[in-house]
Amino acid sequence: MPVYEYECKKCMKIIEVQQKMADKPLSNCPECSAPVKKLMSMSSFQLRGGGWYADGYSNTNGTAKPEAAKPEVAKPAPPCQAGAGCAGCPAAASA
Image (cartoon, rainbow, N blue to C red; front, top):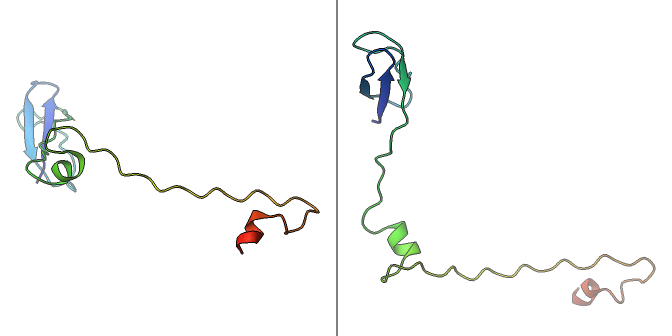
């Protein structure tokens, strides 16, 4: 369950509250009943051990692996020219 921090505007205390994400935010200080402001805290999310970074974006000497070659995208055929017919069209030759 996430821990949220609130700051009381009157007593200036920082309050940590364990709440579900669906719970309503705290509106009053539990000590003095004054309004509180929700703070933006640093996340406790950390990537450790193997996984996406170690396996996909890094190699043993600490430098990033080069990106994989991207496939070439086929160029669209030029538009048909009025009156020329299909004989000279590159799309007609492959069909």
